[in-house]
Every structure is written in structure tokens, then in C-alpha cells.
Image (cartoon, rainbow, N blue to C red; front, side):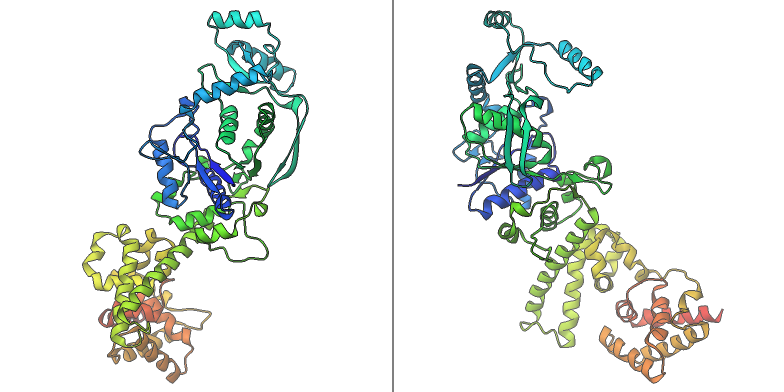
Amino acid sequence: MIKTRFAPSPTGYLHVGGLRTALYCYLFARKNGGKFILRIEDTDQERYVEGAVENLINTLQWVGLTYDEGPTKNGKDIGGFGPYTQSKRTGIYRKYAQELIDKNHAYRCFCTKERLEEMRKHQEESHAAPMYDRKCLELPKSEIEANIKAGIPFVIRQKMPYETIKFKDLVRGTIQFDGKTVDDQILMKSDGFPTYHLANVVDDHLMEITHVIRGEEWLPSTPKHIALYKALNWNPPEFAHLPLLLNADKSKLSKRQGHVAVEEYIKEGYLKEAIINFVAFLGWNPGSGEENEIYTLDQLEKAFTLDKVHKAGAIFNLEKLDWFNWRWKKQKFLEKLKVLAEKIDRKIQISDEKSNQKFLTERGKCLYEECNKFLPEQYNLAEEKLFKTLVTVEEKILRNPKETEEHIKFYFSLPDYDKELLTHEKMGVDLELASRSLEIALKTLENVENWTENEIKIALAKAIEDNKLKTGQLLWPVRAGLSGLQFSPGAFEAAWALGKEETLARIKIALEKLKS
């Protein structure tokens, strides 16, 4: 059975790169009928952050990545290969570290910090590769025993075989390293805790992980891990190294250029569907001419394959995340509207005026739920009007609810504007034609009894035809006069939301400006 694992360190919040790794591990396991494991790699106790494990679990649950084995928030494990927290497995690592020593694949190193710093200094001066010089590799057994008896601190280092290490990466193809160029990595620290390298290999083997999917930064560590598998007579899993996440300037994704923690995007109101959809496409696409980019988690499970993962770094484009969020918000909003429409009219025709007005009000209420926390309390005093105004800027609210007030405040207070706004050179609307068009619109709208957007549209369209005007020649000055803005909702929508009395009053204000 295929088994993948996501093995984060509890050092804070979940990085978006970590979420991508978790997502790809999850998708690959689900696609192949396998299991997805969560393991906590907390052997670096100095970097441990209180509450980070609970936060990781909460975030994975929020986005919908359910794991089959691993730790839970109540401290208990699910699955038969635990413990799934490495700090609880130190005895296991010591056992295998000793086995490596006994088989001459590892050795004790008693070098002091000062000696190692001096060694690195000489290597830098001579432009040599920064590697341990194996001073302790051939220590006599008597000296080793004496050092241990004297309580001299030591680490256990891997003895890298001086041979070519070759493996096939499922993303990058065949890769090989010369063992002579790979450092004798520390496997066990002097505090008795393992490093990532030993714990990773031991746990992946004992937990029967078949595919290790991780970031590109771990690629140089792979020959060390393969050498450990060979030394312990274990079959290595298959490896897939994912491309780096990059800023727009192609530098490695960092906090300096924006949020890198998933939780920050959750706090800002991004939908989980949008986050997952966006992260899935950071280094992968379905290929085969597929143009659709909107995928549910279930759809991603069916579509995901490692052979479609890119080798090149993936640009973290916040505008693309915003686009995904808008598309998902719109989709979920339309689904909600469909339910509302069915309640009002089972056939979802909303054809009669009464049903249509009720539907528009409900539509406004739904939009209000999206943006109300970003609106000052003063807008709540005119609830009926507010709901109408929101309907006219629906797309803008779904894209960025934080900017709602900027888009609707003209409905509640007409901005002061210059009369030149009522003209439009390309449409041939000068001051004289603007005045004539507004007079026609005023007379026309005064006679509209049923104040709906459709009736307003019918009335003004007839006026345009009867007076042999072009559409923009009448609607531009009307829209500009109603909003006092260069850009705003259309004339029909604005008039409907403002109401008949306010619409007529604003057209009269525009006419007065033209007379001055």
C-alpha cells in the first residue's frame, strides 16, 4: 500500500510551502488508494514553539486534509506505527545509531565547537569545501572508551561511503552524487536527540512510508538518506522533490515580501477552497490542454499526478490567489442564491415583480453578510437602501469586501463634482447635449410609476430612440449626475438603488450645475 507523510517541525505557523507539501502528499495518497500520515519532527528542541502542534492540526483540518495516522490535539495517536512525535521515539533512534556504529557506518566525534570553527576557517581560507575532516573517524577504541568514561561530550556522525550514489527522483529524473563530496552528517547530537537525517530515515522505514514527497531544499540530503538505508539493509522509498516557492522577483519566498503563513491568509478571510486551489497550482497543473483551473479537493484527488509537477520554481502570485478567492466566493454565492431562489419560486423563474423584488432583497442580505464588518454603523440605519446598493456592486464585493464602502458611499452622499464630468468628448456629449439629455431623462423618469431597474431601462431606452440619441449620449450624463463619479454602477442600477425621489433630485442638481 502507498503511504506518504507530512512531517513538519513545530516551530510556529504552517508555511504555505509546508501546506503545498502536505497537499501533494495527501493527493498522491488518495489518488492511489493509500494512506496519508502526519508526523511531528520536534527533535530540535530549541526551535520548539508551544502550541505549534495544535495549530498545525487545526490548519490541516480547516483546509480538509484529513490524515489516517498521526497525533491528535488531545495528545493521543491514531494509527499503529506511533508514537508519531519524534521526541517520544529517542530510544528507537539510539538503537539504530548504535547499530550503525557497530557496522562501521557511523562513528563518535569528540571535536569541540572551537576546533570545528578553526577547521572551517582554514577551509574558507583555502577555498575548500566546508566538510568535516574525519579527525575522529580512526580514533583507537581505547581513546573512545576513555573519552566516554571521562564524560567528554560527543556526537555520532554518519560515515559516508566514497562511492557514486544514484537514484531516480519522480519529479527530476535520475540524479547522482559523488559520496566524496557529501559531508559526514551528524546523526545524533550530544544531547541525545537525533538530527533530521537519522530520525527521518528510521521513521520512514518503520512507518512503512513508500513515497517521500518534500521540498527541493532537501535534495542534497537525499544521498545521505539513501546511504543510511543501504547501511541498515533497508529498501529506500521513492523520492519526489518539489520546486521552490519564489517571490515575483524570483527570490525565495520570504516574510520580507508578504505573508508566508497559511494562518495569515485565513485571518484575512480567504476561503479554504481558494487557498487549496491556489496552492495546488504552485508547481503543478493537470496538463493535456486542460484550461480549467477551478478544482474542488475531490477533483484534485482525481487529477493529481507527480509527473505533472514542474521542476522550475513556482511564483507565489498574490493576485492569482485573489482571483481564485473571487471565483470561489462567486461560486459559493451563486449556490446560496440558487437555494434562496428555490424558496421564493420553486421553478426558479423569479418572473413576477413581487418575487423578483424579494429575491433582490435576499441577494442584498447575502452580500451584506460578506462585507458588513467592513462598513461603518451609519449604513445600517438605511437597511433597505443599503441592500439595494450592495446588489449594484456585487462583483466588487465578492472580489474585495474591504473596499465596499468606497464603492457605495456615493449612494448616501453625492460627491461634489465639476460640471465637466457630465460631458464626454468621444461620445460627442458637450455641455449643451448633456443639459438636453438630462432634461429628457428627468421628464421620462418622472413618469415611471413602477420603480424597478427593468422599468427604468425600458423608459430610458424609449427616450433614447424617440429623441434620436446614441445610448451613451443620454446614459453618460445621467450616470455621472447620479454618482458624481467618473466610474460607478450603470445608470439603470444606480437609479433603482437610489429610489425615484433621490434620482430626480440628483438629476436636478446636475442641471443646475450646467446652468452655472
